[in-house]
Image (spheres, rainbow, N blue to C red):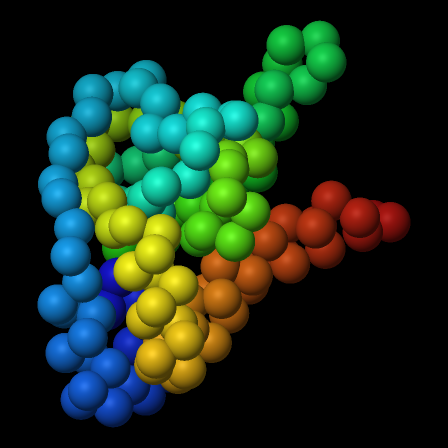
Amino acid sequence: MLKQLEQSARLPASDRTAILALPHFIRNHGTGEFIIREGDEASHSCVLLSGFAVRHKLTGSGARQILSLHLEGDLVDLQNSLLGFADHNVETLSPVEAAYIPVSVITAIAANHPVVGKTMWREWVRPEYAWITRRCSPD
């Protein structure tokens, strides 16, 4: 997560230290496991430490609508920290090691370290904007 954030922002030493000190627990997932399911309470946000995952929603016909692909370093469900619940599914595409950070901690670091907060949101919004642009393009 720190490496990814530092790719798009110059973080002061205090922000880097705060990120590295975030309380978390590690969980391993097998291929095809759900990290989070649509409708679940959002108590934690998840950073992929290894592996690949897909964020998707199920359509009315039961098909998967892929929203994004995630890889090492991605914070996969940041928006849930504001919503309070998952509005999508996150499912593993390979074995995954993930760090779970309490939502209250994500909210606190964003408030107490504004550069970190702004950078987290920018990193989450950038792929979403690109996906919407591709989907809505007349070409």
